[in-house]
Image (cartoon, rainbow, N blue to C red):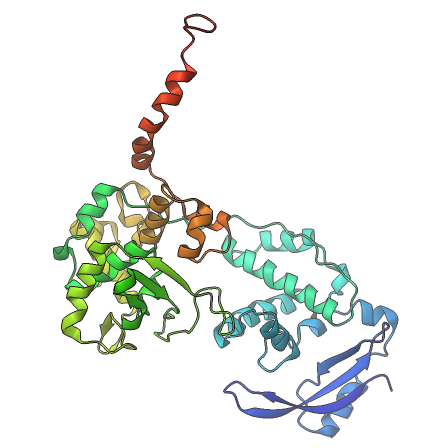
Length: 407
């Protein structure tokens, strides 16, 4: 018989060990391929399942259909997930659940197509008809490419083709001007000092919102004037032991310098709290600040600082309902997008005036200079400040007196 069944213990959804039935076969190159016996609870079910499989031919082994290739992808306990773990890729339940959703969408549309019959043009033409954001479509393409790589792992001789990427529909965050920062960072704009210091730390260290919510007392090294960033809070408040794009095995930790002004305010705020090393610095009811609450406080501070429209104007425009701004990007005059992440953009843009993109990479947690430049939103104010430095060069450029004559 071409196929052979066997039982294999795997980890279930909550870490429990369960026995699952698999089958294996040897492909045309002599490589052993393992796959799950779908919906099989015992040996009899597994034997009946493999009887329904088509006879193995060289074409079947080297050009499987998408449905078979992707059947066990991103499922906890699968060989695919084990390979991701060994390659240092994220295998958190959140990541696997998200990726599995895309995988099932791919199976639903392309499941009966042979892997080698898939062309980038066909996939892009299909995505043109889908009413989704550019970010969603790019993620779909990313998962599709992983499906094709998985086919190669299973014995299909194929090279992952090149796909075009879609433009991202979401507007990138804008940066604050110096005047706006001065107007924004006033204690009276915030419900209490905690939120004032919270957002000041985000700006001072170029933090992501989730990283700031996750700050514990031991991460702030006052004697070294530094902040260690070793995790972030997910939207539900769960704290990770790794940074964004990292994994438990490769956490991608980083450190940033903090200015004396911020350190002084932090020390004044934290000393009366007598925090233990593992205590969260910014809390509500004993838990890290909620993302939604932080975003609402930020939006209100924009209004209080006069950077956004007034509350009455926002209510008339339908941007303020039930005590919060409902469309933050549209709430700033001129269509600018000022959100908590704008503080990180502002940090990178201003630091980039003094440091190279390469020098900034360890401080921002980016893995390439291109990512640093993506965050660089040098405003016209900073451009004007740099003009005097070009004065001497411009004078030389236009000095024709002793060369080709006067202009």
